[in-house]
Image (cartoon, rainbow over all chains, first blue to last red):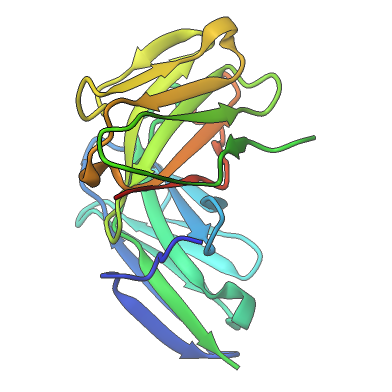
Length: 113
Length: 114
């Protein structure tokens, strides 16, 4: 599969820890944001999304925070598990009615047992 | 329901050759997108089809790349002639019509130009 980890920032955590992955987005006009998880040899998989009229959204074990003032997104994963090891991308899009995405650079999360 | 499927999963070709990548979107998804990830960099948008029409091809790097979606079903992305810098993983995604509908990605085609 693809070597997704080259040249990527890496976050290494122990199983059970909470993880926080950060992302700076580029377009102040973007109003819809998504976090994707990409495992080696697979395509990006949707984790959670948030619209610009919100600053926090929670899912199962994941929380996304949005700070529009500084154009910053974060993904918090509670009780991180080895299966969470992957590359995480944030993506932004305009409220155009379509899903054309602009991706961030990605962060590799490594979870040790 | 089958997901987005891409073929081949991996292709190794020589510089100057032609390669055609195929994407079968989820049935009923009018929107089809091509993206590319060059080694170590972010995933970048290439183009977007709505049914058989090109809605946005602003991300296509140059005229060596040709995408088609005849009949509004599967899509092909041809690279001719391939250059070394075309190496990377090419992802296809599809989504239903509607505002900010979720895009489902295929597993990608890893293209290596040598």
